[in-house]
Image (cartoon, rainbow, N blue to C red; front, side):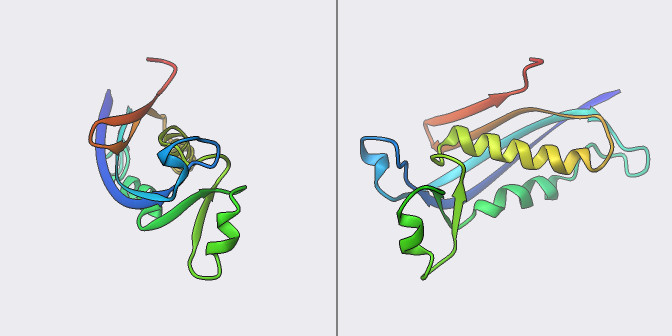
Length: 137
């Protein structure tokens, strides 16, 4: 029997898009919202598909961070004063969805169960989001 779970997590963080012309090229913050849908077989021991707290912890690594492209010259300017979370490209909603999916994939594969990450939605504002959908859908 396959089950499907859903988890929503919010965090506050700033970012800027190094390769973008417009407002988002300036450092600014958002109240981000991440939605995760997963499906698969439940564990025979604990009767859960995947721990909601693990999803929350993986997403909250971004909370109250400055998130920048690792090539951004602002990284070197800020690091003497605070931690900077760097990404392999501009930290767009799309890239954050991909990074969250990779972290969830690593965590779920370590449990040795057949778990699918069906969809991840990263809201950058109340009216725009990027959605990463499993190819099987």
